[in-house]
Length: 515
Image 1 (cartoon, rainbow, N blue to C red):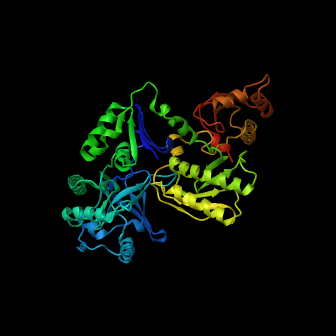
Image 2: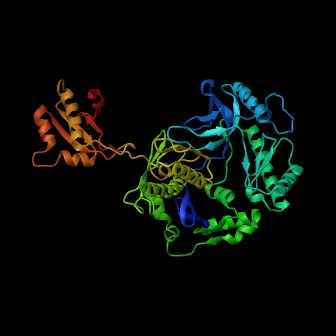
Image 3: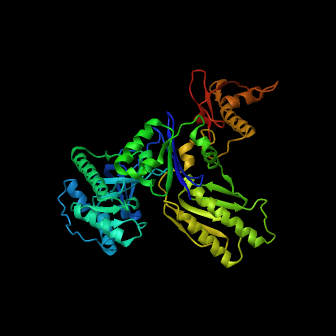
C-alpha cells in the first residue's frame, strides 16, 4: 500500500490530505478561524463539580467551560506541588497497578473544589453545543517520545514488536529520565540512534520547565503551552516508514518541513518534494473531487451499489444499498459482496469525515452465519488502519452493526461549512404559501386593535419579490382585506421565513402580535 501526504497552501488556509493508494483517507484544514487547540495546556479554574455525572467543568477562558471527567483526573498531589499547595508527594517510582490507579481516581474526584486551580490539557475539540474535553493527565509529544510529567511509567508503542528493541529503548530512556517523569516511546523511535532520542527528551523536558515557570507567573484561566500547528503535528505524528512521499506546493512550508526533519529525522528528508506545476496540487492527484464527494450524503461504491450517511447530534446512521448491482444470480452472494465492498468504503468515509461517537450501519440482510462473521471480520480489519480507537459489535438479528469511534476533531462538514442562516441546519425552509399565511395571521391579530394603519414589513429580498409579483399583488390583497396600508422593504439579513413589522416611527412591534 502506498501512503502519501499532500500539503496545499493558500493565503487563507493550509489543507493536508493523507492518501492510501490514491484514495483520500484523512483530511485536515488549518485556518486562522479554526485554530487547532488539541494538545494545548491551560491553567484552568474549577467552575463546577458534579459528582452525579462524575465530572467537573473547568473555566479556560472560552465561551463554554471545558468538560473534565473524573476518570481523566491525574494525581492531584503531584500537581499541587506545582500549584504551590501543601499536599505531600508520593515518591514511589514503581508503576502503579490498575487497582491502585482506580482508587486514585475515586479520591481525586472528591478532592476537586470550586475555584481551585488545575492544570489541564485539551484532548477533544468542541463538538456541536459541547465544549472542549480536557484531562489533567498532561503529556508532551515529541518526534520519538511522549513525556508525561505526572506519571512514572516507561512504556513503548505496541507497534514495536521486537522484544530486544523494546528493551534497548527502555534502557536508553530510563538511564537519563529525571525522577518524577514518565515516557512513552513512539513507533518511529525503533532503530533510531541514542543521540536522537536524548535530544528529543531534552527538548521535551526544557518545554516542561518553561510550562512550570508559566504556572508561577500566570493567573487562571490562561494558556501555558501551545501545541504544534496542524501541519507540524501531522509531520510529527504521521511521518513513518510507511509514508512514500510528502508533496508541498508552498516554498515557505517546504523550507519549514525540511528544517524540522534535518534535525529530527534526517532519513526522511529525501521523501519531501516541492511541487512545481501549473496544475493545482489537489487537482493533479484527484483530491478536490474526493473532498467534494465526502461532503455528500450519498456515496457510490465501485461495483457494489451505494451508501447513505446521515449524521445527527446523537449518532451517525449508514445505510447500505445494492442499487442496480447484481453480479450473481444468488441473492446471498450478491448481498455479501455488496456488504464487503461497502464496509471498506464506510471505514474510509468515517476516517475522512472524522465521524466519531455512536455509528449504526444497516447492511443488506445476510442469512448465513458464516457470511455475517465474514463481514464482521472485514470491518475489524479495515479499522486497523484507523488511528482513532474504534469498537465493532457483531451483526444483530436485524442486520445492524454498531460501532463506536473515538471523537477528537469536528467532522469535515462542520469544518468546511457553516450552518445555513436560512434553514438553521434543518435543510428545510417554510414554503412561500406557508410563509404568506403566517404573515396574514400576524396581520389578523394586529388588525383587531391597530395603533396605526400604516406599517412597514421587512422581509428577505426573495420573499419581497414574491409578495409584489403579479398584476394584483398578494400584499395589495392583504391591505384591502384588513383595511391597512402596509409597504414592504427588503432586508438581506433576514432568513426566508423571518419577518419584522415596523411603525412609522421605526418601532419594531413584531413580537407584540406573535404567538
